[in-house]
Structures are given as C-alpha cells and as structure tokens.
Amino acid sequence: MVAKAQRHRQIIKLIESGRISSQFDLAQQLSRVGIDTTQTTLSRDLTEIGVVKSAAGYQVLSAMLASGSETLPVDRISSLTATVRRLLLEVAIGGTQAVVHTPPGQASALAVEIDRAKLLGVIGTIAGDDCIFIACTTNSAAKSVARRLQSLSQGSAGDPRTSRSQRRSPAHS
Image 1: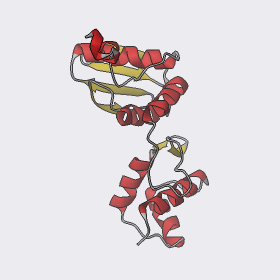
Image 2 (image 1 turned 90 degrees about the horizontal axis):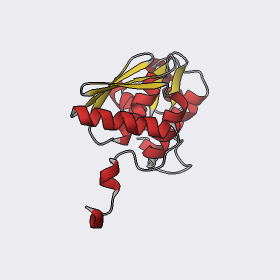
Image 3 (image 1 turned 90 degrees about the vertical axis):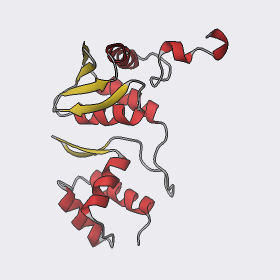
Image 4 (image 1 turned 135 degrees about the vertical axis):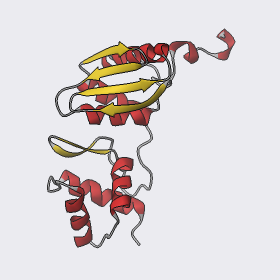
C-alpha cells in the first residue's frame, strides 16, 4: 500500500503536468505508476490537497507538499489572503449570505479557500462559475465576513477567522 503523502505528491505531479482532464484519467495515470486507488479515496485526496476543476482544468490551489512531508500546508490564512487578493472582484450582503463575485471560472478556487480558513460565522459555501454564496450564521456574521474578505483584498492585516473585537487581549474585554 502506498503512503498517503506519496500518493498526494504523485497526484500533484500529474495535475501539474496538464495531462489530467478527469478523475478517471488521474486514476489511470496513478495506476501506471503503481498506485491503485478507489474513486472515493481519490476524491478525498483531491479535496485534501486543495484541487479544484475549473474551465482551465484541474488546479492545485494550496501550497505544494514539502518534499518528504506527510502533512498538508497549515497556513490556510495566508492561502486565503493570496487567493482573495487574486480573485475577489466584489462582495455584497443579502441577509445571512455574503455574495462574492470572481472572474469567470474562478469561484470554486476561492470557495475552497474560504471553507478551509474556517472563518467565524461561516456555515459553508456554494460556488458557481463566477459567484460564491457564503451561508453565514446571522445577518451580522454575513456583514463581518464581507468586511473581512474586503479587508484581505485590500491588504489589511489580522487573522480573518476572528472579528476585530475578538482580537483584543482579554485585559481589554
């Protein structure tokens, strides 16, 4: 049985080669290099690595696995910040939802990063081609998430998982 980290590295290598157009193609290519896997495991691997399929094909969204490492990238906030700066065009609020607009074919890339960042008040995301619906716990959470994403797109510092009031030290509470 092939170690998970080794399988992940091979998946990244194959996707970066540009020869993969479907999970079936990926499974066949993995089999050719001696890695047999089920569709369920492959789907889980793609999610863990941070791979999405867009109009441009499969793309690895997160930083690559360090050579020989058995863990995935841990700095999800930096990844979110970089992706927001690159892809966020506009944010709007509608009740308990924040609505994000991206360039065509890029919504799923940003939605994955939003989900991975585990932002406070976010229940989950739904991505279309160029639009993301972010389901939030309350109207105020939707406003807060929209403000945080807008701040990240403009280069503001701070951990986007928490609100401004939660970043204060306990002595100021």
